[in-house]
Image (cartoon, rainbow, N blue to C red; front, side, top):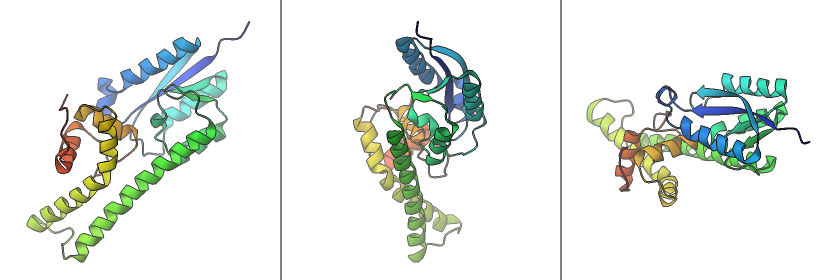
Length: 222
């Protein structure tokens, strides 16, 4: 008789507010439960990380991996995005020699996971570089960076516009893929590991301002 496969779940939410409210967490749990029901797996334990996907210190992830090693279990995540698609983390996961599976893409092999991580990290780096280039261009045109009053307002507006344009392809792709609200769009951006203008998490209000700059109209606040 084949031995039942055992799993340890790892969930991540981007903010304390999401952790307290369960926003995003419930969908992750449902995805994992569907996968386990389909394969007949047994969930031994679960760990919840509450922090930004860009941070490298993940104590709950380390605890989940240690649990997997102790009990010879498989680490299960709801989506590959939950590991922030970060090359550093993916490499660490590979080196841990812990078997893992993503409920949204259970057939993803190691090469595919590495490629997803590399593309996402490249996307974040390009956005950061273009933001710095926009600041440098503004300074070259005489905008006093760090000034107060009208100069600061003009500087902020110019940089915000540049950042918005850099994100236009991402926003348009998500909207065309069925995103129908600012709340859903903010979750999608956070899951992709794309930082906001202040290198923080996205929220419905910040996404609303972004869409206004891009003149993208759809859905509304939830």
